[in-house]
Image (cartoon, rainbow over all chains, first blue to last red; front, side):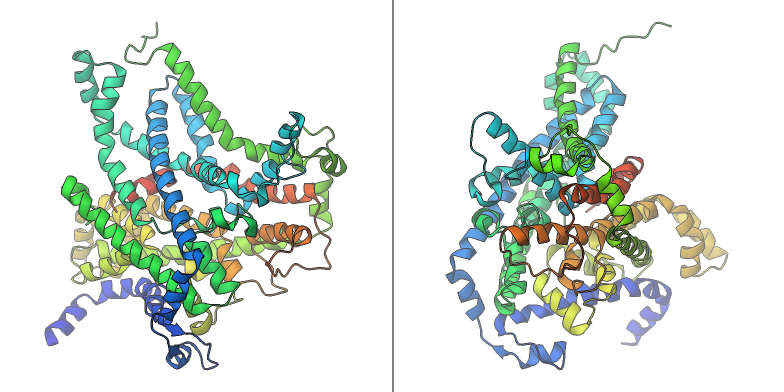
Length: 309
Length: 301
């Protein structure tokens, strides 16, 4: 015991430095982890504050989970979350890598820099602003899309109450926002590849396409794997703004826009069902943890060095 | 001197094709903003009748003159967001750099424990609801400015990036010589390490500022009492919602000030333009910091 105290004293300066951040993590990250017990409670707010509320609420075992999974919602939000993530991860990876390779090959470097900067703009915009942009295209009476549709003789579409277009809109806008920085990341990696590989390839008579396939792509593999594992670990999470702001929280669209994150939010704020929304959040966190552990394990089997841990 | 032809480059045909493809996409990324700018400069009546046009048939500055003369909404929100961003970024830099520095020091005997403490939060979280309960029931931060500042001030990503910066840019020799001169850890940190870590600080500072500037979620959860000046993005959101509320019975019980006139179409567009302009003009200069930060954060993660 005294050796521990000695250890603390030896490191006291660094411990002091680490203290503020630690406090933050304990309060804002770890304390909520203990708050997960609310998922097993019929939570009632007690006037005496946080701990009283938790200690005084009844324990209901798995009832919140039963209720959660008995509704059709559980299936819909899980399906939506997973499908959107799968499609976005796959499509995003292909497009980002492709763009990175193409940009790298452009002959005019200043133009290439210009394109990159342009592509980066959506990353800096908030979802509120993007939903305004989308509105100028999708508005029923004034939007660009409907103007074109009516000019061609069709009837205007009320996008904000027609679910069927939204899977495409969501995937498209999601990729639009992220391609800028993800392609630039791959581009940075490509620029770092040792030129002598390409020289050797060209001496052997390799075409540009062969060079891409046998030199560029293998060098990008580590980055692609890491980013994909991280993405898979986040399979149960969604970009809240994309699914909440863009469709303007329209109820008619919930079947295709409701994901676990929006469901948890709406259950808490609109329905006040603390127990069930916590249960949904716990469901999300546990599956997410399992997924990232599995993904990391899988990668360790394939490419030992590139696993997260 | 004759320019040597790049024999290793792609052919002109492919070059044109790729330029068109990438250029088109880059244009697609920028176009919506330009579109909104054009429409904010349109005459209100024309807009209502014709809809959004690339080139409005009639121009007018009324939207902007309205914003700058008749209403203080936008300016107040700008002010609040600016305050939150500056204070938040400073707090964030303090929390992140102290923590990251400590865990970057190999001589720190508790290093693994604290590193794990930070990284575990990337794998598992309590979720929205317990966090909400902690902030409102335990800390009672709702409707205070701290609810806008504290939740965003720390995250494991910042720690990773900063730690990597420290590990790769601070030679051990510098720290050793400071030790030999008798400086303690804290003094070494403040007077020697920090000044040469400016790139890392700039990177985290920019990420943090961007996060605060664009945040609407914390206001949505915690900062929505009637009478409070809304942060910028949240103001835009409430205005948009109030329009929807009139059109379809939305569940959103916003606290929009009923006495103020509902902004017209062009005024809303102008507000979006003004809210976005600072970022749109500034980001090209800081782009490389974000690229660096994102690359470092993903690879070393």
